Image (cartoon, rainbow, N blue to C red; front, side, top):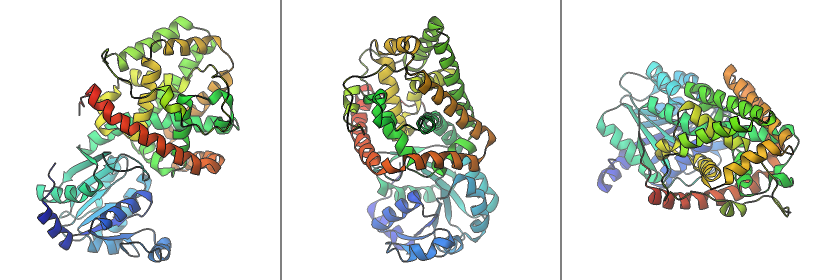
Length: 448
């Protein structure tokens, strides 16, 4: 990490202008933070939103379009949807100021870098970024990927100094490494939570009102699923559709759901146990005896949306968790290898999966319930159908289908977003604090 000294940074702040093209949630977050830290910022959104932003009282300059940003700024960040990156760069890229630096913050870098290489003037340098969290998460300590694709060291140092105001943890990758690792840490996680939401929606069921969805693990599932659906669809569609590694993983997740469910309903207990225990060994077998779990049921119990908790907890197959670990096993992914690039949602889902698979006796109980208890079968069937629906949409590569399915379920859960996000923020804060202690105790090494 090369953060320039205060004097050098102050000089840059006097001479450099930061441009943001796209003032969605993340673009606005960046613009406001840079402006607050003393940088001169100029930003734009679509021209139809110009008057609204112009009169919004923002602390940075609002201009009508990306041409005006590109001609003025020394470092330009494209904060736009992955599906639109090529089109927007093709329009505004040729206007880029001579000798400027350009980057983007899409979740899949392959189409972004290709758009830059095709449409930017040859004298423009390329340094891309990606904050691995949502706009409502405190940036402090969160992973921030920096990609030095076409730039000299001086330009890269400038970008890194600018980004240091976010107080994030800098990770240095090529764009190809970035895409592989973000697929490994996010694709299956998103598929699982998106499938939960669709299954509940198809069943016309608010899970916090249903006794069978009570418990710490269920609280995590519900809160994070609602958190995902409270965001914009393109946050997840870009990664799923534009990243080839994500395609493979989402298809595998759907296959794992179907195959495990088939073993359950056919009462093939020995085969189910053999497959799941083998997955446990491949994914968690390297953990030592003194390994401290990130999460436990008691911590998660306090984050319930339910107003009338039931007296007891019903049996649950936890198919969504079994399938994600089975997917990692089938794909040869060891999630701990990429902890340095993990999102808050990934940390929580890994923690919940780890708790289920590594707490003595809990996985055995779960598999016993999967075979012997039929009360959850219809819910599991809905989940399998939902997982298949998402994998089909991703296979078609259709942003429109993705948007339509996402927004229908989003509308179903919309009345609870305010409360769920407030509770989810508290849960994430608690878990991230534990995660810091967890890393120190377990001393995980990254293979990046």
